[in-house]
Image (tube, rainbow, N blue to C red; front, side):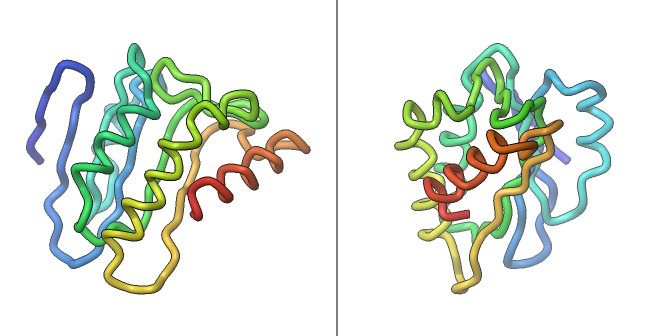
Length: 149
């Protein structure tokens, strides 16, 4: 695994041996994030979200650089609460989805442009209680509407 450091994000690239792969975004605010990085499966790219910068912007920038790579899944590992995610220093929740709607829709466009099949792509979220209760269900549904995932 090679690591590239930039001013606002850290990137780990796993060696890809197939035509499809997943991307995992791990927020550096998650306890033992480095242990999680070490346990990611092959054919997966791992990107660490700088917890002092806008996580939605970091993800959008990285996805833009991955266009054409036949992405199949995005995994988000971050802190959460009912109806919201913490991505870097950004609160993404029911109250901020509209603010980030263009970037979230861009995620869908990037996946559609990179898809080499008609299979839908998946956005898998690993954050405590994100989908819990009515707020969580509404958040997940609105996220689906914006991203198509």
